[in-house]
Image (cartoon, rainbow, N blue to C red; front, side):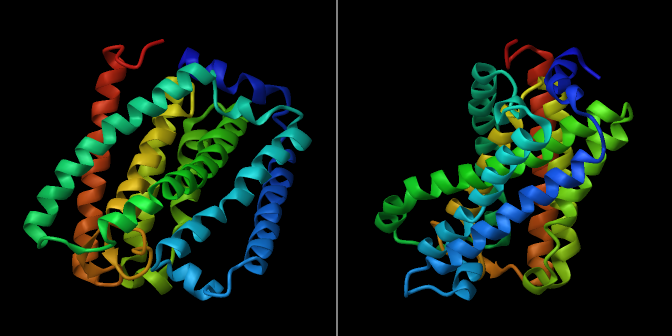
Length: 292
């Protein structure tokens, strides 16, 4: 355990009891379900919950991702009530976290843009998605809800779970691996992904492991959140497979998420890019590029 990670988990050491963990998680996901219920009741007439889940229009994507606001609210309330500490204690020192967030975005986006261009050159050039003028109109709402979605997931998995498990267990298997496995398995969706569902679990689990490792080495959520935000912005707002979750993308890949061979190849390539980004981040950390 690095000194910066020891300082990062210090607030969790005040209430490390395991019984608090399921209580907090129940509160988090209970508030999430309540938020989704309220959101479903407030949908405009042009939307149903089915069209929101399909996310084939910009409005549907924005509404779908805004559903993560319940998780964001839930983790804040759960940490305050169950552990008697503020949600900011899950993030680490704010100035350093913000700097790491920006550096994470600047690290991942160029790699994904170059890698995506290479992939599309091999797999077939993309098709037009949203008209550029429409995409620009939706850009600010998209950035906002992707920040909410990625922030909620990072606060729960690399913030709350990683901190509390590290405060209770010395073994990295508990605080580094278990939250990453949970993060991967929660993305299991055979209805949407078909035969690629387990490849999605592998790809998201790998990203979770990379994010957990970088959180342990930096002592803030900033770098993991920046990488997560940039990854999801690329996948949701720039280039997306046709079909589900493609409604806000500027470009569409020439296949759908359920197409086994094409989507599987893209997921494997994405995993290779994640490992490349992780290696670059570790190199930058070893050279002091992220600062103290």
